[in-house]
Amino acid sequence: MAPTVLDKLQRRVMRRGRRISHLSPKKRHALRKSLKKLRYVASYLEALYPARAVRAYMKHCKELLQQLGKNNDTVVASTLVLDLRETHPDLAPIISAFISWNERQHRQALRSLSPAWKRLRRAPLFWHQ
Image (tube, rainbow, N blue to C red; front, side, top):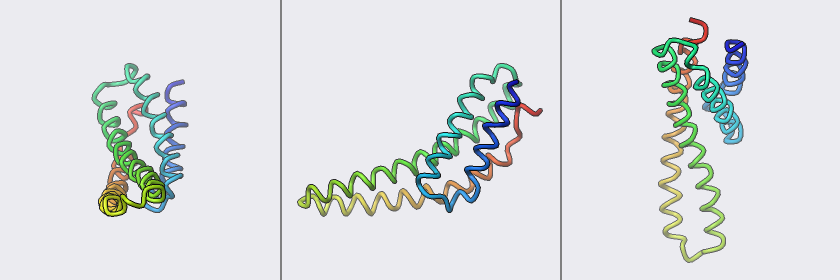
């Protein structure tokens, strides 16, 4: 039963991650949640499989999750700071500096998504070995 469950979660992740660099923030967040589910289930079932194969696959999951998390953090921070700018116009210089920094972080996170995605896509599925 474990391979069937993992396959289903894997297919959902692969479907949601297509054209990852062109996804909206909302769709990237949905991908992140699906990948988290896959990782949690894989973690729960890892004792059934060779540790080395599981570790290799989980490394790629973790890497992509980190990049998706950074990306999500920059999107949320941007929204919060824009709200803050409207309620506290006196903080405009600080907010402008933060927005510039956050945009650089966001671009960097977006650039890191595709390579991390490719590594996960190419990773051998430990439950098929």
